[in-house]
Image (cartoon, rainbow, N blue to C red; front, side, top):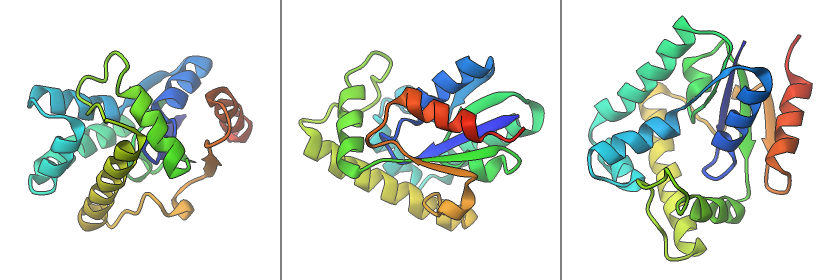
Length: 181
């Protein structure tokens, strides 16, 4: 079984993905980690890499091919990715949503954690919210242009969970309760 977790910035994709994979004894992959590593290699933060990706299509294609390849050669893993539902259509597709302010608060906090060096350290939550909005808008525009894929369309998913007011543990429980037999 492959479980793809998509969602808004700050919705808990990576946190939930890691917890779920551990609970199931599966591998965990994160295209967000891959994206941060690409940014670091280029001496950019994730927002700068996102801007560059608007004109350099090879950046998105590299990550998208990585996701699609995983879905063809492996099984029993969890992947958190904004587009894995599209590139691994046979996965159990989960969409996590979050209120924009709460998502910005989480992104603001995570940017200060170890391993997130390629993420911009925002001055405050309001700046993080503006950056999230710009980043998601840029990504969504490219996804529609390249693949006619709309990550916000809930019809693309098997399960949608609003994470604004619930813990990551509770989100994992909801996913486990809804997995097909």
